[in-house]
Image 1 (cartoon, rainbow, N blue to C red):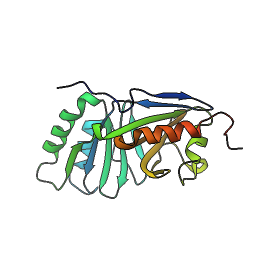
Image 2: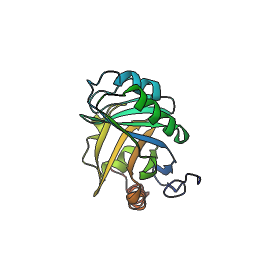
Image 3: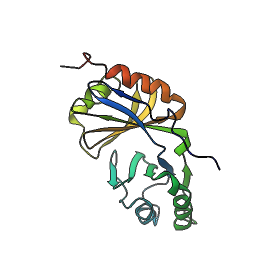
Length: 183
């Protein structure tokens, strides 16, 4: 088995906000409706979090569970734990209608950090970032591509498809250029 690598090799840009690619990060797409028996216990066993409410993300250390759609969750965990996590989910939800798939290598993950991190995303996404609370997850777009992001610490974590990683990094870098702040 080859070693996992991030899409852009840890690319970084320091502007009025810092943009950096993080990863590889383990991610599982979990499809199931919230009423599936045992779902919350299965998610807790994998992530240490409860089942997130609509448009929310629950974080516990380096693991998280995010609501993506009425029947879809994104589970985030260390990259090397995804295989065991999917096996655990399959066992816990055996006989229940669900699907759990490792999507780590199909995604790219970025951190946008600093006191003006919200300004970087404000230029790219149709989201009221001033009203976005900690723990809120937005599934939206960054310019022309699908993305999801949430506020975490002094910035945001953004997930997009790996195939658009270079484009998204370019967008984030251009948006974080010094002198391009929103006042």
